[in-house]
Image (cartoon, rainbow, N blue to C red):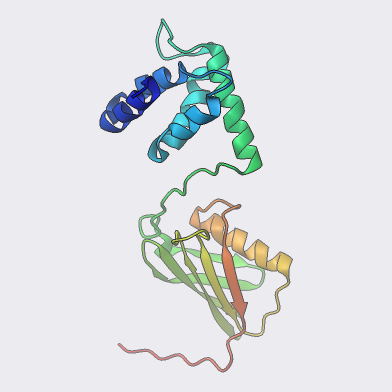
Length: 202
């Protein structure tokens, strides 16, 4: 087992020492192996390691008085992190959001001439009733979902015509109210309900 493999094992077994282990991993970096070393960091530590590289490597700020890693090694890692993120090769992990804990059940908002208020709320799903004059409709959103697309949205608004720009603006507005990033991937279905019927049991 080489030094990098030993450090990866220690990282998994001793996560409370992870920042010291991060520095030892960085001290192994050279121009020929920087990509391999970055990819070796376990997935559950990838985002923290990438942030750590910037926090402790910028402007010669290191963990200890006698740093193990050099400025050049930090620079090599920073340059690769920036390159991967700008090219879309690496995307930060989805941060779980709990709609119940956020108080979404009390949320009300407006978009255009429509008023929306929360109809139901679970940790990962939320639904809104929509009112626009005499017309009624709804929106439901699910996040995060399994698979490549992490957010699914269903929108049923009677007598409404939406162009692509309005659809994207509405989705971004909903994401903003729910605390989701505006560039979050999504799949949305817009449709007109035909002859809707409301049934209530109390």
